[in-house]
Length: 323
Ligand SMILES: [Zn+2]
Image (tube, rainbow, N blue to C red):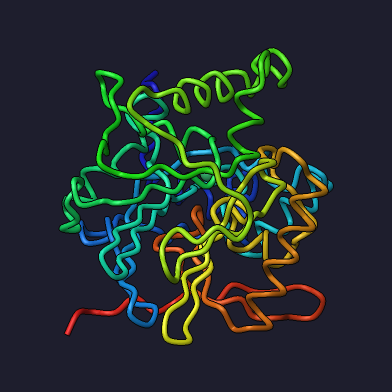
């Protein structure tokens, strides 16, 4: 008897006659696809400030890390209703360069080569975007998670951007650098903690520790947005009456964080505080019509926050052809 090796066509024929083989009637078509090389960066302006969103790649995460304080069935139903995968959380990593006056400010330094193979493309993509690494004058670290700071050093443990001033929230630095922190965090975070200490201790990096409201350069101000981590900073860019709020990881999911701001992710270190902070930022962005840039939103992660009922909705900005 020949071994039955059904082809794809056979399976579809079978599905047509046998209900047990039928694909679910409400199956979601995965319409995502590869972008051209141009998607490695995206340019916009905020008044006089030139903004370039530069990708570090993406993180391939399970959706079990989303809405961990909600009923799992409710999270799955939410994802299904929004045509999102219920298994894979494909998380972009959108870094930002702000060029204003003589300053070239980079927000976060990416994952580097030591975290995951899907990320760590930031430095190459900066070059593709025409941004000289030597020209970067300031590096702001929003928080010390691997996808934001592990790219600080090269294979020889030297800072990749030796000419820049490095800025981080004082509370963020202090939290990770507390003696014995690695042994105090849950096991799953121990690698994060060890990596943060290594990155923050990079020889040749002289940290400027700052507080809420610190002005990096004229028109670029840090806002303490604790919750995801305790010393987390977001960045406000202001020029000629326009504003852009770079949320860092105060928001990590464009759909969930806006429509279900009470749901927290497994990496939100202080869950209640992350909700309070998120709601404060959403209210501010919607009320003052401030553009937002979500570090982990679908590339390039830029758009606006619209109030909808008791919650919000993210309205992505238009991607346009040049000229
Ligand atoms: Zn992150």
